Image (cartoon, rainbow, N blue to C red; front, top):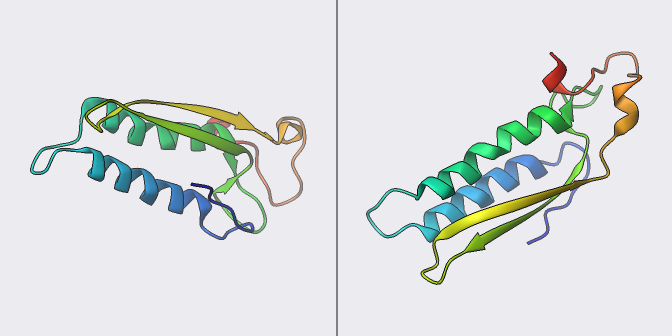
Length: 107
């Protein structure tokens, strides 16, 4: 599944809903999600802290691309995930435009 869009279109939020849906579908009916599935969900805010910053247009703008691979076991349960980041806006580390900030992790 590829999530794309213009700045402020809701890609990060769409990804959160997609992950929640995958966790829900992968859990057994009437049971809670597995600890691994919960870990996958809990990782999203960590990546946002390292890759999101305030811009003039968006106070929580993703400044990187992300490829996430969710892994399932033979029973259809989430067994793990790996995330590759790319296109990180490295120049933001040294210089920010007026009205913009560095990555959230630095505050």
